[in-house]
Image (cartoon, rainbow, N blue to C red; front, side, top):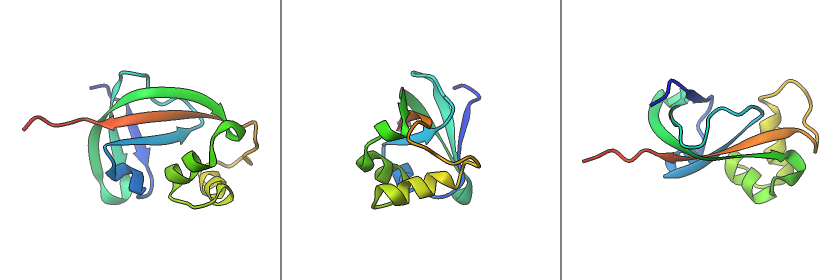
Amino acid sequence: MSDTVIVFSKYWSKLDQPMFTTLRKSKFAKEGEKVKIYNKPNVNVFPALCLLVVKFTLAELSTVLLCIDTDTRTREAAISEIQQFYPTPLTDETVFFLHLFQKEVQDP
């Protein structure tokens, strides 16, 4: 496993799923890289495998994806939630890297 740690500063329901996404303005992991996922509020650390990293502008991201990723119900609410993590205003041209992770299955 690499030393890469992906930090989530709040609880997101997606982290309970076997596969989940995260949107970041930087590329945090490479495809095929095993990382540690750190969920600060629960002090929960678990290994995950990065399956995919794709670059999108905010305008290209679907509302459904944004809502699932942020536990919200509207595009506006999702963008407002994401904006909390960045000091500069988000625009349709803001670039994000969509990371798809799969939780590592532990051998019994």
